[in-house]
Image (cartoon, rainbow, N blue to C red; front, side, top):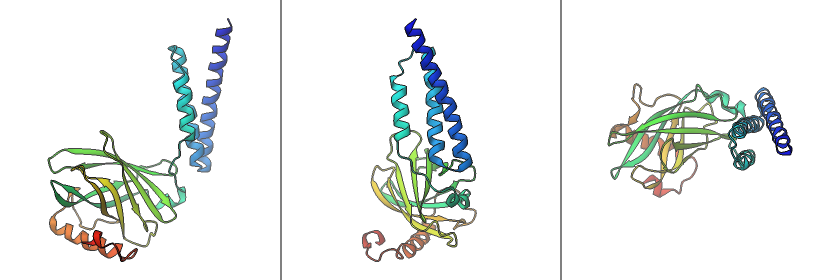
Length: 238
């Protein structure tokens, strides 16, 4: 009887946490406070999972630990007002290395459907010279005018790519140069040049590896832009 009573109390507590989670999600969405939304989602998700665990006599220790980890995990979020003008298509060009040769790739970051409070999110599919494609989850946000992006393969253990674009927050600029810390498909660590443009640099260009001619043009655009930040990066500019 005591065990059953304790079980009922625990279930009641989980239900209360789920209700609290819903309230926090609503509050966070209305007030545009991402931390409240994230905490509410963690409470709701963990409470529902734990209720299912009770029904199947599942050990709840792992669920409680997961809840604590979720509420304490740092999250990269931004002011929604700074993201408003960037919930659209952005055209990204980034250097990489395949089969020992340096190439430029082009893809579209389509943030038009990204509604997550405090962050931009989308998926991109990048083609490989050997014909394979990989899908990556991309998310990003701002610190002041500086845009930081994170790109992680949806399958596999490839290292997360981190990009920094110092002036993407300057809406009056059409092209924004940056650097990406990445691992190439050759398995080589690389500090790679990258450009994000409001409009396509080459109209009607399909996504994927660009021509050598356009690659040289992108080199010039990136080198011209990056010199605004430092004049002593000869190794990058060779």
